[in-house]
Image (cartoon, rainbow, N blue to C red; front, top):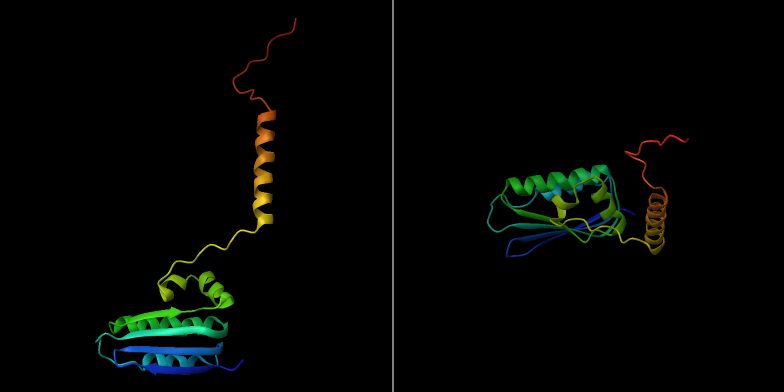
Length: 145
């Protein structure tokens, strides 16, 4: 899907960039330009990057988001990425930038019922195996005789 960017400025200093489509190498120049085109003054500026309509995010796109964050922070602005969809969120988590960009900690994926049963079954089996074998540590063999 083609990349698009919509920019909104509010009088209170909030700058919102709503991204849509594929945020890849072809989109980086436009994205970095928009992210760096915020006012130079630190007066209550907050940059919000909305990823709700982003369908794909590659390493070039991640790099652009990080450059945008670094630019905003160096100017004294607040910066946050919001609404990443599941696949995009996963990419941000796997690359280790989720918390820095969103200000939130990633949530663990919900465990499936099958995985929970399997884990409990393995643990129960291991417990039985340990209980069935008495320890012989420190026991000397007795002579038969």
